[in-house]
Image 1 (cartoon, helix red, strand yellow):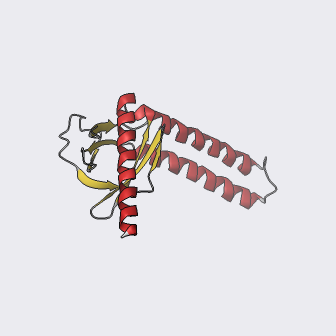
Image 2 (cartoon, rainbow, N blue to C red; image 1 turned 120 degrees about the vertical axis):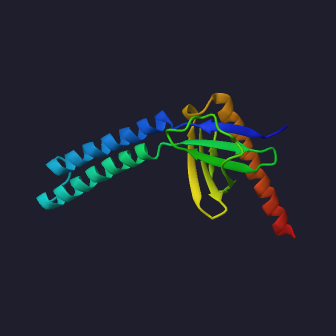
Image 3 (cartoon, rainbow, N blue to C red; image 1 turned 30 degrees about the vertical axis):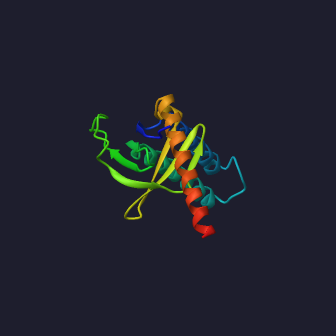
Length: 165
């Protein structure tokens, strides 16, 4: 069985919706605190806490929208990973040989419905790629999930054999 996978991961609409919903809830909390409906704070404290909540809500939502990029991941049959981050003006038909060689860090989250891939390049810079099931086809998600699990298990086996010697 080969674990070779090439996948184009588009920005998740579901993730943007979730972040947007949480931002709206935080704005509602900011309004409740600022109007004095919740808590026994002085006028100044209500204004400060409400303002901070509103600023954080808007900043998180804007940061989430700005970080929406398309990633191309290519995993070879030996487990070598190449990552390419595309800007919005590029098209998805790319050469998989391009991109930067990265390694999958053990702190990555690999669940059946969510992948949080922590990928580190040769300069020790880490990129976190969030992959929900709506960002890629169902068969592409499954293939990527299996390949990432295989890489993690291979890393664990290598580490254990190094410890024994």
